[in-house]
Image (cartoon, rainbow, N blue to C red):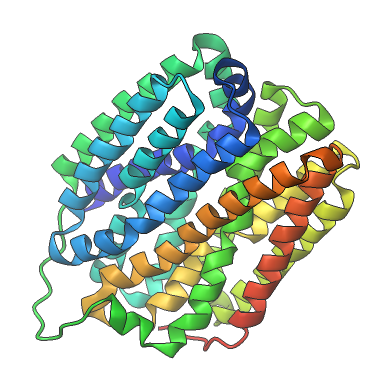
Length: 390
C-alpha cells in the first residue's frame, strides 16, 4: 500500500502541475497561438469543470471498482492524451480541448488516495494524512512556476508538454503496477450520492467547499500571470518567481492546517478563521492592486496560505459520511471544491473582458473584489455547520 500511495502522490504532483501551469505559459501562448487571457480562463475553467464532472462517476468507481484501475486508466487516457493534444495545438480551442481531457485524467488521483485513507486508516488521522498528501503533491504547483518558465525558454513549450505526456503515461503504468485496492466492504447497506444530499449537516460544508479553493486556484492557475504582466510589467521569468512563492505558501498552508484540527480540538473554527483571513487578503489585494508589486506578491502568497484549508474541510464532511459511501462522499465534496474553481474561472474571464477598457488595473481589482465577496458569503453559510472531529 505504501508504494502505491507514493505513486499516487506522483500522480497528484502532475494534477497540481496541470491546474497551475497556464499562468506561466500565458505570454508564449498569446504570441504563438493568439490565445488571450479570456481564452486561457476558458481553458482553465474547462479543466476544473471536467475534473468536477468526473467526481460522481469516480466516486462510484472507487466504491465499486477500486482506486487502482480507476486512477491508472483515466490518467493514461486523459492525462497523457491531453498533454499530447496540447503539445500539438495550433489554435486556442485546441488548448481548451486539451485541458478538458487533462482534467478528466487528473480527476481520480487525489480521491483514490483519500479513499484509501478513509478505508484503511483511523478516522482521526484522515485530516493529517489528507493534508500530507496534498502538501507533498503540491510540489507540482512549484514545478509549474519558475522551473516551467525555464523549460519553456530552454526547449520550448511544445517539447515541454510532449515530455509531460510521456511522464503521465509512465506514472499511470506505475499506479497499475503498485496500487492495491482495499478489501471489498461487505455490508448490506445500500445507497447513492442522493443519500448524501439528504444529510443537512453536509450542506454548509459543501457551500464553503464551493468557494474555498476558487480564489487560490484561479490566481495560481491563471490570473497571477496576466496580472503581474499587465499591471507590473513582469516577464515570464519574473512571473514564475511570484507563482513559485505562492505555490510554496499553498504547500506551507496545507501542511499547517492538517495537524491543527487535532491540536485545537475543532475543525469548524479552524477552517472558518483561515477562510476569513483569505477573504480579507483578497479585499486588500483589490484595494492595492495598482500599488507596489511586492505588496501584491505578499498578499497573493497570503491568499495561497490561508486558503489551503481544503483537506480539513474534506475531513469535516467525511466525518458525517457512512463507511459504505466513503468514495462517493469524498468525491462529492471534491466536486464542489473543484467545480467552484471552474465556474469562477468562466465568470472571471467574462468579467475581465467586460472591464478591459476600464484601465490596466481595474479588471484585476474587480476580480479580486469578486473573489473576496464569494469567500465571505461561503464563510457566512459555513457558520451554520456542526463541528465534528470523528
